[in-house]
Length: 589
Image (tube, rainbow, N blue to C red; front, side):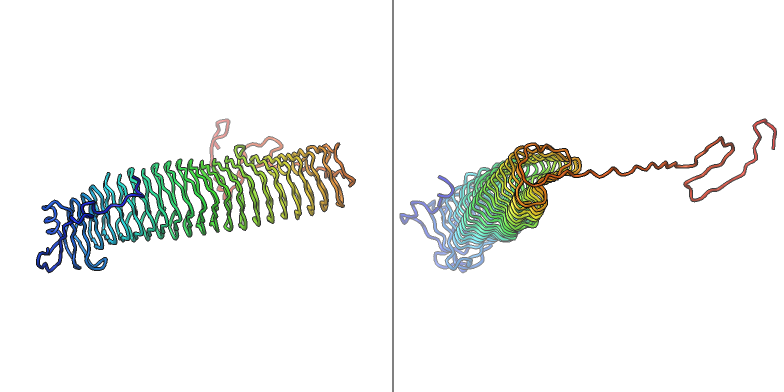
């Protein structure tokens, strides 16, 4: 039987009317007990299922409950307070039900409530643990907690089974709820407020959280570590100091329909963890919405990242996420793959950023498919050594301030079936980078369609540039371009321009429109298959600047022999002394 189906009640004997009832009142009374302990001892002596009804009051006792027993407050929940000066208040072994009590303990390392075995039910119970643990459920035991309140201390399921429903955890000095060492626990409609470490920690265990709210934790609100499995559905996490959800150390699980606001990271995945995240919203995260690092993986589908302070989706330090159908809106950078990371991104929309939509840096590799980028300064930016590579396929990039695609360093970038509309430059490659463009369209650029500079290499096949206000293609410095089966139409100044020592070849290309020239070139490009009715103009190379030779002698220059000279240079102060000494012939002066 799974933890989600367990419910623990007084057994069949109780249902048959065989339960013995005991009444406890601070004032005693006929047939009654003045303390709870005496009623429990009497019940244990009879060896029958017992129901202990407790009148309102404050009882200072340590309770050891054995067998099949029910403790019930006769008044409203909270009217019966049981406390101990130190250590455990309720020690349970058997099938035990507690309803409506307040249990208060101090320095209870083993738990104010210590369930050593059997099945425990806490219903409408409040537990306060000052400098200790609220509830400890030990290996092979089970507990059901409903409509309870836990303050200051944590609840621990250690190798046990449990169900937690409509419970509140507040001001916990540690984790609010810990599920560890092969425990299996379901948590529904719980609320955690102000835990000093994690709201819920699942370590080498299994937990299913549904409809929960977590706020104000100092570390990850929901944490899965040490090969744990954590399932999160329809939860809310807000105002946490670190990550809202964290999967680390080969943990797994799924997150669905969950909303995060005001966290450092929406979801953090690291050290081999591989969760599946679907239909979630990560809003106003101070650093990242989705953060994958250190060999973390993860599948992220149909998620929305709003207003991330740094990066919407970040894969770094060896991360390798799979992202599809997501939306990144507002914030600084949309998707970044950096520091030897990887990633595959499909069907994702990025819009309204202050920085780059897609970034691949520093020996990282990324594949982008079916992307849509709107109103961002840059579309795709790649930078790094020769191990940095990016592929962009079947994408639309619109209304950008700078370049739709920009590759620098020694990075290698391939774009296929990309449409760039309304920006400064469509495709740009510089330094020693390589950019391969296939079956792409560039429309309405305020400067140009494609630009190669530095010592970069641009290869373009079936490139179409329309309505660029300056040039369709420009190669400058020592860049090399290889352009085939491409067309340049309606470019304001020139279809193609080759400056400096840049060169290359054009194969079956055409330039049309009413521009001033078809090609301005420097004799370093092959134009034999160019089709155009516009002028082709050779750019006259400027004459080399005159060379001036300057001899700079640092120190004095002698043109004949000099004897008995005292020399000083590059000094601010010189002290000269005269000394009498013998001449070279040995005669005194």
